[in-house]
Image (cartoon, rainbow, N blue to C red; front, side):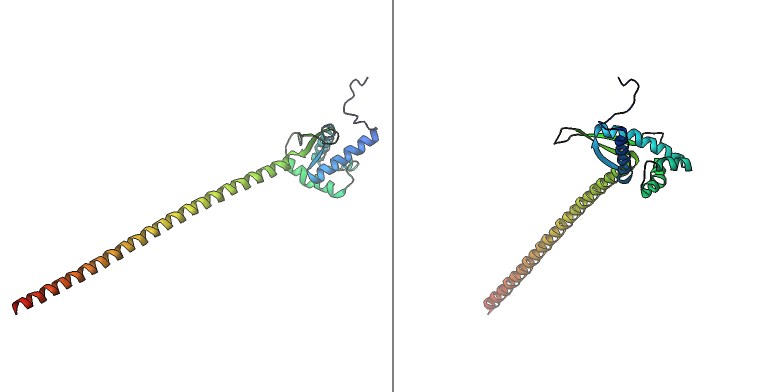
Length: 194
């Protein structure tokens, strides 16, 4: 029996399990998000959070301890210079495990293991993008409304101008007809007088 034995075996020897956790931690620090099985994600989460807690000290023994596991120097620099700074004063809970369903081939439960602080920035960026999209659609709808009102005003002005032109033509025609009527009446009056 395995009384008080913590952790998962993951069907591996201890050296194989250690190599797996180191590789998962390195990939997580590099990409900030990895996809794996739920059991591996939960086991890697405790390993990674322990490393980040050590890295928050920032002293030389902590660097040496973490360098025993993380062999890539670029990832070490990123861990101490960026990730620890972004974590700030967070008292643990640096990672998140999100279950995403089962794998098609063997039905294994899959999960995403991600660093919490990094993915909040992505969510905020997408929210800002959505807000900017909404604002631009509102602006375009307002612009179309103003364009349609301008067009209707222009149409009203042209119809009023056309009506004024028709009225002025009618007035001209009426004045011409009245002048011709007057001229005819005067010519008739002249003929009668003769």
